Length: 141
Image (cartoon, rainbow, N blue to C red):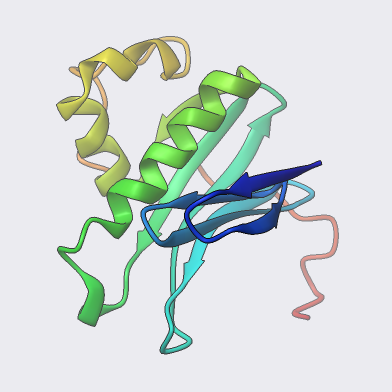
């Protein structure tokens, strides 16, 4: 199913979402995924997560290229993740410092935190959980 973007009059695949001239794509692989947008320069901004259980995603990293920092791109990635969490019913562990800060700022998102977490109990983003073991850790491709 495609989403239609009337502003640009183009069809987008269902895993993409248009946000104020910014196309955010949700890419998934078994065990992890990311929200990504590509700049005209070819650089990417991303927010990554690890799937802890089918209902819990650990958002562990946010990156925006230096030239684009402060432009609201990370917030748009975060808003897309929050919208997907509400639509798909998953909960979030915010190990990324940016994601943790956003949960402290947006207390109305607290219902999306994994069980046992509140905006007051999440850390400053120190990664408290080890990454999951990959089935083919020796394969770097």
